[in-house]
Image 1 (tube, rainbow, N blue to C red):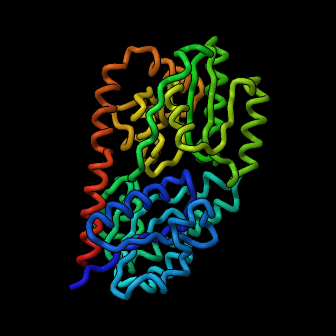
Image 2 (cartoon, one colour):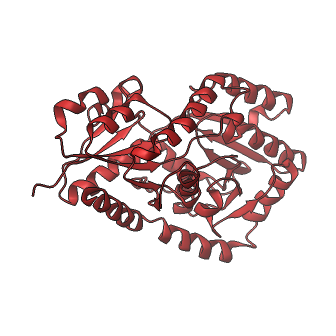
Image 3 (tube, rainbow, N blue to C red):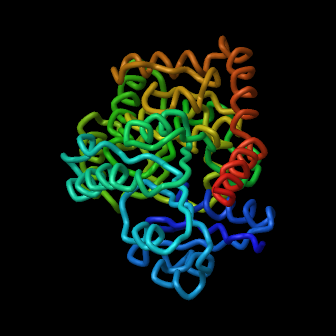
Length: 354
């Protein structure tokens, strides 16, 4: 019997996108298992920069065979998923989480509406999904609540960043804080700016560097800029925008601490990247962050600026180095590409044989 193809379907695809990066890495794992495997994405949200590796979703009928399977990568609803559900012989779900719309209404109402529709779509699709998986146990629990049966946890694949030598001497221009993530209200870059102000008010020569695009939410960017100006810390905040992998790797290499105050994360790839660069980490214990970070960093339970500032100083003064190193090693093993690929192979085999 000929093996079915195992294809992946995304709501959109672009460079620097965590789901796109996972799908590209997963495609190689699936092909190494002996299956044909292509990637399809909603044609409205397919970046030309990645179009040589990802098909527009409407091309599915001309490429895919009747007995082939599909893996839907879900973070927002899309007509590409309806096509896969109608055409594929069996369908698996890999849930990457949908941001709660209440975190977005103020600055990104259009995105908030998409997220509300996405949450509704996740439940609507449940009866038609044969096998289910998620990035994290946090996301798997959301699947159960939406009506999915016995989801497994895969994680997220991501190719390694280049290894960079630190160019900036420690403390050369103060304490450098780094955050990597798109500019959107749930990521709480505004809270990072408030924490920076608290540190500087306390006499710490701190700097904040923000990596990530703001195209989805210009009003939030403008609010963050105004906040930095109002707090008189604008000269200490650098908005880098989206960057290539070599630049990102250098940012990790030159940072003193990674700080994540996001209120909702389904996994948080940048935390894994920061651990891979041996950075001290401070993070809000929200969503899947405690699961991803484990004992590899300092978790806080509130966004009070003075508390964040205190946690940053604690993470960087050397007192917790041994404990954090041990916790980081444990998390890196649990979230390693080898471990994640093995989880993926189990999921793919289940989908192929169901």
